[in-house]
Image (tube, rainbow, N blue to C red; front, side, top):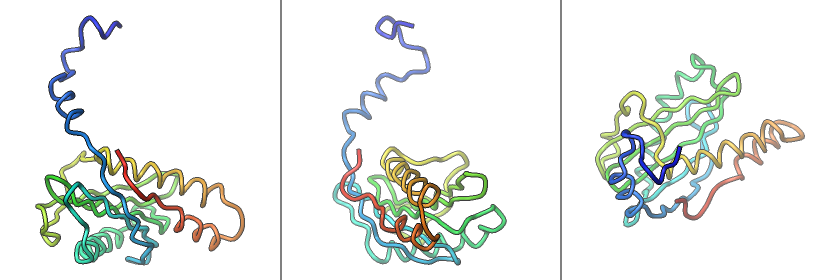
Length: 172
């Protein structure tokens, strides 16, 4: 297929180029490893330009995560999770990513209006991470495999190494 001649009808060239023109970096900050609903939870802030994740946003996200993680045993949770608190350009998002049995993961996405952490609700079915959130989760997939699954030594040492293996800076 020669893409220089004609694009498939489903390719929205105008929308893709508009997205490319407005694409920018977002800041990622690790916020430490916390405990929620008996899970170890590695927490990150993802911040659009001009936005900041405040402590109240993090606390609200941890409450949401705890509610979701309480059902973890029913979904085969292994007790490790990653929490993204995303102050986006068009709203606020909370992602709860949990490692579950069989080398699988469970993901819950919550969305809401800017600056109203108590208004976050489960996202629509099929909603998945945006490009910035996916970059953090890609790092976390590698950290989990490298530090926990392929790590050496006692589990406590592996979990400490996992907790310390964080992504900082900007993602695109």
